[in-house]
Image 1 (cartoon, rainbow, N blue to C red):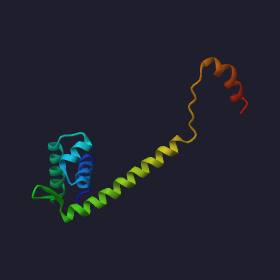
Image 2: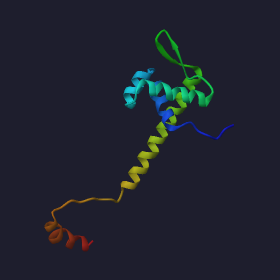
Image 3: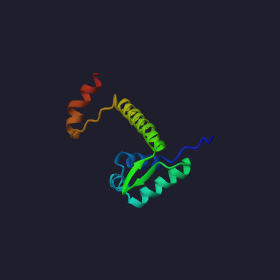
Image 4: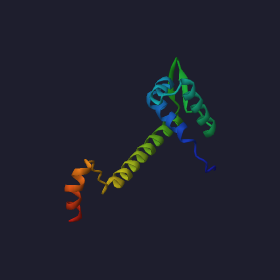
Length: 116
């Protein structure tokens, strides 16, 4: 079994296309062309060796494998978003930026800050 992972961009495109069940709406969300979405999906399907979508009467449907993969990808993106949020919240603690006129900072703030 290969340890290589599919490109993150292809996974983002798949997530958007699966949520919307539309390459056009996915393209609009991601600010790319419909052709770019189609290309990324084809590349991902080639990488995985299976079809993720099927077309039926001008509608787009997830295959059984595509539905399963979408649920997993959705959970992974949710975990990644939460991990990023936690890290950003932790790094923001203890940092305070104060903008003041220099004269006020020198005459009022600095003497008081030195007393802390």
